Length: 114
Image: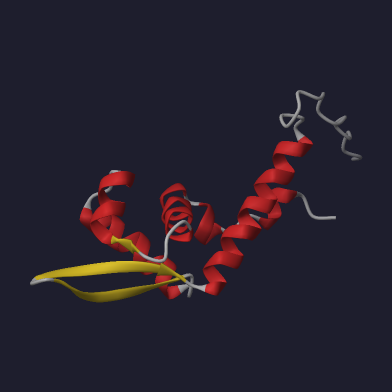
């Protein structure tokens, strides 16, 4: 049996990318400037995180206009929703294992054999 940390994704688990996916999952699409403001990232840093997620197929970027202003919107893909769900499931399992869900005592630690 794999420990829950073994199921965490290196792409998704980074906190800003997890934030991008979580916010995008809450809306049909989210505007770049909103993510920039809410996640308190520089434009360059946000662009880099978006590129990583886009390369992984977890989001698509839609470019267009709002009136005469150019805009970029982020849309989570089905694969992105599945990756976010898997990440949350692994995190929930970690929480359960450490007894934080209902104040229960953590499970016993198994000493290594060596």
